[in-house]
Length: 514
Ligand SMILES: NC(=O)C1=CN([C@@H]2O[C@H](COP(=O)(O)OP(=O)(O)OC[C@H]3O[C@@H](n4cnc5c(N)ncnc54)[C@H](OP(=O)(O)O)[C@@H]3O)[C@@H](O)[C@H]2O)[C@@H](O)CC1
Ligand SMILES: Nc1ncnc2c1ncn2[C@@H]1O[C@H](COP(=O)(O)OP(=O)(O)O)[C@@H](O)[C@H]1O
Ligand SMILES: [K+]
Image (cartoon, rainbow, N blue to C red; front, side):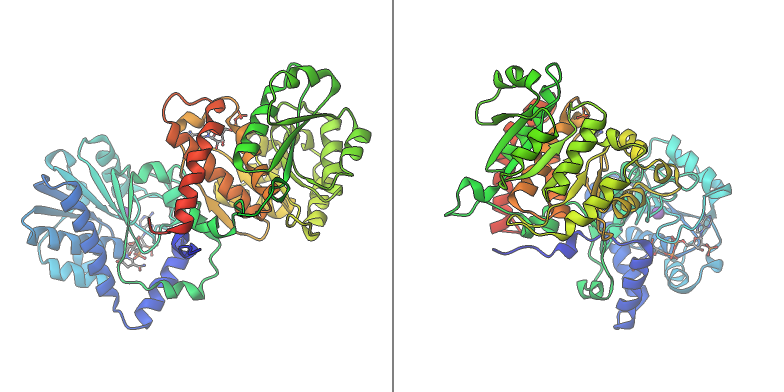
């Protein structure tokens, strides 16, 4: 099979981007050439997206983002558009490539305080990009407020000014763009909220930086796209049988709370686990039995019963949490599963049960991660939403920093893969790797979709996909299933969409550029 280069999904921090830039320049491409290509990409985006915009304002900041604006203004003027530059500093104060671009533009720059967006068909934001180093205040903030209040569409160069490329956070006032044109690779701030929403659709332009500059950078942050993990995904083999694809187990809650476990179980089976069994307390056996067909059912009231079941080595990936109930039973079951060297997806009540005393399980997770089984390394995967995350990692949740940093800190502490859910789900591994998810729809914010996700992670773990890739793939498949279903989605619709998702992945695996 041929797989696309996972480096295509890399996200670069502003520092890494500067390093890529330095290496490209050192290898013989002058900075002004990169700036001209960046400006060409901006102009091209304007021509295709806003062909009718006659009168265009460009806001230019004090650095190279401003330089890009001057170069784009020149190109747009040459293409017959009427352009006006509003500079945060006079062109004479610019340095380096930005000064060259301003000289080449040759026209006047108005002071930014005189900017009135009402007069323009389109505004191009070249105030700040990768070099934003503190909160925007004063004249720049005032220009951004006026811009955001006006109806004119906005194209942002590299990043909407005021959005941190590293974290997606707003630093002071931030531009709300309709389109963003960035260069070479996206930055975490293009995918993390609120940055993602402030960017609008993002175009990644090739400005001639060779992918080989990435060889010298230890890439750790990625967009959660199939290229990142498809090569690690276990798929059914031609001569395989069901036990090759693992046996997933979902713990059911009590008689009135069984639905969540069945949702997870259905997702585990559609996700590709060869077999799925629900372990149910005796009180809930009939409720479960009434609803299960391909999914099997076993009674499991206490640790003794669980220990007995665990003598069957084929049960290899467990889900504990959905509808399970909070308390000691959950803690003990989780510990028993990990101690038996099986993979565990801890969700919902399973996570809440650990609040205040997670250390023993985290230590067990570190130990479990070292062993190997016929289905790969056993692993712990935690799938909290923000509320559950705060219960388990209160100090990390209260810390300053981005969602990306919080998820990575938690993964390192827990020795587990952490899936910090939400619109911009972050999947973080204990070794520092992280992926930011952008696929999915707001229709996923509906009861039970988290249970489906937990089941999908277990499906991948059962099949032997390594834990980080397993979690990334599950998050993507979950989001893609929601997209394919469309509006009106409820959690029960997701498993039925998975065959289409599998089909897409198979097509991608055999023809990566399709
Ligand atoms: N890398 C590449 O390959 C390519 C990069 N390109 C382009 O270069 C851009 C990066 O350029 P850049 O490094 O000059 O940074 P940029 O965003 O213009 O800002 C720095 C200036 O802003 C200032 N400043 C910062 N925060 C501030 C605040 N809150 N309020 C006020 N001032 C503030 C800061 O001042 P200082 O912090 O030094 O006091 C400094 O003067 C990148 O986004 C892309 O568009 C392309 O040309 C193609 C190739
Ligand atoms: N606005 C949104 N856009 C995209 N995905 C979302 C959004 N809100 C929630 N989700 C996703 O929906 C799922 C909700 O999970 P969770 O909060 O555990 O719900 P439940 O407990 O009801 O199952 C997660 O996968 C989350 O990432
Ligand atoms: K900008």
